Length: 174
Image (cartoon, rainbow, N blue to C red; front, side, top):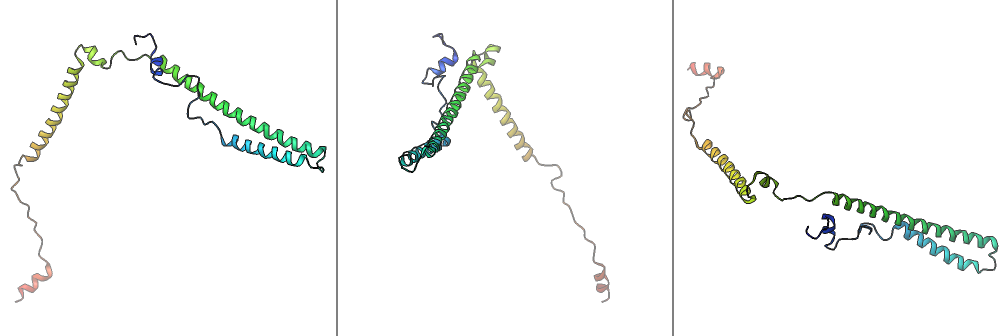
């Protein structure tokens, strides 16, 4: 490329995603995160409803707070797992782009024609002509083989069956 970009940068400039961005196949949320958020909302609602009761003493409030803390830690773990998946996907994406950038693009689309010193169009025409001759030659050969008469085509085959032995005596008794 004449602009001084590498092949990978040239492919990316056409609206490709950023190398640090997470791949599109990783969802924004997981079922674990949704369940953890629902459990957290339920624990918060239970704590607000039961903590204001006169019968809820310090021990009851401590149990409610433990439920809230467990739900919060599960939400944090689910979010950390999702962030780790996105980081792994982004790292795989960056490794793939680096591997593509390491490979140089071919110098020519027709390396055989360039090596033997003829025009690519001429090489393609010769290959097509030879293929056509080969296919037509095979077809003509098969037609000639099928249409050619055999030397002994008029000879016939006779089947001679032996006479039944029981009838031979009956016919001669007359």
